[in-house]
Picture (cartoon, each protein chain N blue to C red):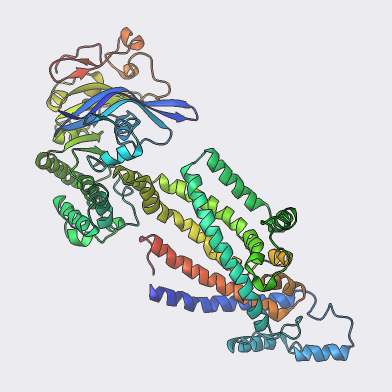
Length: 311
Length: 322
């Protein structure tokens, strides 16, 4: 298994390089540049700015320089947030996004998976329909609708009650200020996990070996947990792998609405501002996370199902 | 003394096209230590009869009547009552050993959990008993198999593991649902030998559900023939083969190819299809396919009547011994 992980990590290097290359050149192909939004400046000053940011050299040389700096761990300066390097921006934003993302994942797993199991055991009953109705709502209502609704309910309607929750301020990450954004982030994942778990549990409960386990006189709970659940978790893990990577890198919508200083905002703002280095930085961050999570998922497959072999 | 007594059992399934009666008014008893063969085509209700006995009907299935295990009615019994019988006093072996073992659990653990549940064994004791049971069903290198996963074993070995699992608590009865169907012929013979050994040495009653008359001839003491959810004939195994009294039994026997048959001849079949359980023919369900049928058969259903000491049949005709 160790050699499997090492091999996968080695393959990750060319993968990452390919992503960096494509992203670098695509970014440059997009019309406009990092300084277009500024007030018009004399051509000499623009030329100086371009020279300062290494934009005056041929594109291929810029690419080479970027890779060299990257190898040294230097992601370069941000073009828009002038006093910050990309490393500093990500260093400040990523912990916030990652903490909230992690909390949202944990919440999604401890709520979504049991809900899915419950729905599968009560298939086609009122319980099942309510869980699936809730899940469908969670999936179809986008976060930019859900977030204002949550704010409306908890910050405004419940004002003055013990259930009032703050929204739109961060206060350095006080617990109370995290509740709404974390809930909002996790809702769609709760919904997906409930649906996926339900479907795979229904499938697993139909398996012959579950019948065998029941014929052995094991209590139903043991049959479900010990015999059915483990194989049923395979699709859940498949979904969670990239899901975790997305959650950890934050959400533009949720961070903007709830005023979180996370890294999710940078994906959109960076692209709109043609902040080349920042876009590269967040792309490398999320690509590395996705690659890592895919390796984790593949390792977990083997732990969940002994028929999976690491080659 | 009967260990399992099925009285007027009816099993029906709710489907989108209405209720399907898989088993109709079946009464059967399994004596202690005997092997009762159940024969019939697919859909004749032979498996569902005993699925009902194990409380393993699909969620849309419903059983009525009585299934007395050692005097205790299992129909409508609570899950915990069923669980005190299942795997403990009555074991079951399923048709498809390839899919009937949990793929992510080691063999030793799957066997051991039966005695941990029913006998309160410690994991170490359970492992020891699992090892002893694997040896009893003649699994080579039993010690090593305990730590293997099902996919690492062949079909024949997996079926032995299934048998070992059913035997873990020395049950009084075992239901073997087509135990040899998925296996190749040489392995079939070995599995039947093991079942025979279980019956003779442990005095375990066995219900042998199969459509293979050869399997029945080798192991069963008595045979019940089922057609369209009903028992059409019950007799001791010799009489069934020597002197079938129901046209369907006779037809089944005629379908079995024999070594001394003339080469090149067409194989005998029972013409027609098994009936649709939702639209059973009037009268005797078998009459559209029966060579002996006469008018009464199309309007009236023959009851299962006792004829002779060890025999019952549901047919108006008396068939002369061949």
